[in-house]
Image (cartoon, rainbow, N blue to C red; front, side):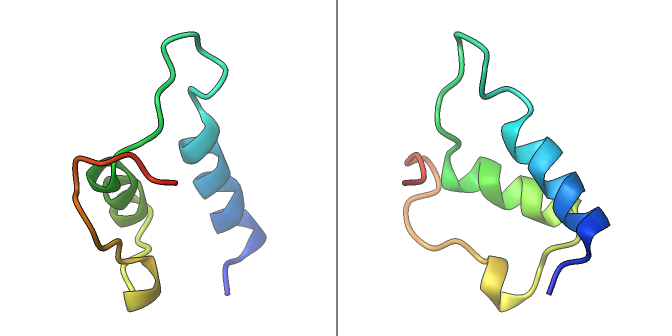
Length: 56
């Protein structure tokens, strides 16, 4: 479970640049970096696959 505060931090980090014309989907590596920065490190938050591919 995430607290509402943690969820808010994740939302801000995830959607910070989504309205910019230059926005591109995050790669697995970039998503993993956001999760790690927020302390979301349990197995649930681990991303598998090619770290350079955008997440779907």
